[in-house]
Length: 144
View 1 (cartoon, rainbow, N blue to C red):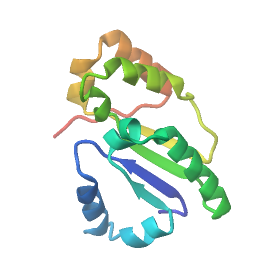
View 2 (view 1 turned 180 degrees about the vertical axis):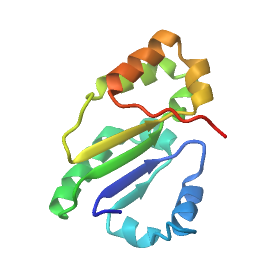
View 3 (view 1 turned 120 degrees about the vertical axis):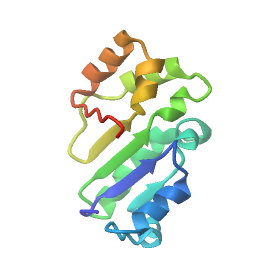
């Protein structure tokens, strides 16, 4: 984990599946150890974005503060934005995404993950362009 705290917010996979994938194969990560040390947090994105009273922003801020205290190099967040399409929260998605800074300091890296099909079908071309411009760096991967 390169001495970082990693936050994973899956939507299309369960948190248990993510933990299992991290434990297995080439990754071979001791998930329990890293969660106990607060260097890994796996939380369902629906809960993180909509079901947590403090909200994901506060969770991330606390993780950045903890990382500094623990001597970590920073925090990386992988958030599946599919939870915003659940229950038709498309407008909430735009509000949330555009409220985020275009760039963070070196202590925080965020990766907003989208299912390409949903991204293309659920958002207008104008919304897609606005999001892509706002993020600065983008990676679009086609499913095989």
